[in-house]
Structures are given as C-alpha cells and as structure tokens.
Image (spheres, helix red, strand yellow):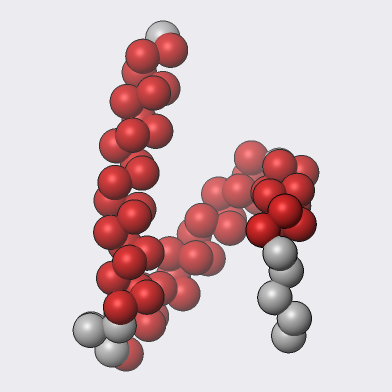
Length: 67
C-alpha cells in the first residue's frame, strides 16, 4: 500500500463529516491499543497515546475558552 503525502491526508481530513472524524479517531485508538496490548513497549503506540494525552486537554481548553 502506497503512503499518501501529508497534503493529501490534510485534504481528506478536511473533507470528512464530524461523525466520520469520530470514527477515524476511534479506529486509530483501537489500532494503537491493540499494538500496545501485543507489545507494551511499542514506541509508536506510546508516542500515539502520549500525543493524544496532550492534545485532548488542549482542544477541551480551546472549546471552553470559545464559550
């Protein structure tokens, strides 16, 4: 499978509906959760969950500030 460049991925991300974005995030989470279960020391899975643990509070904070 050919890897898409980031510009193409940005375009795809911008074109999906909110419910599809939720599905994408859920699928990514499940994929990395499975990797971590298979190998608790998987650096890629660790990086994903570390980034997620930083991004979620940032987004929540931005959403609270907009209200």
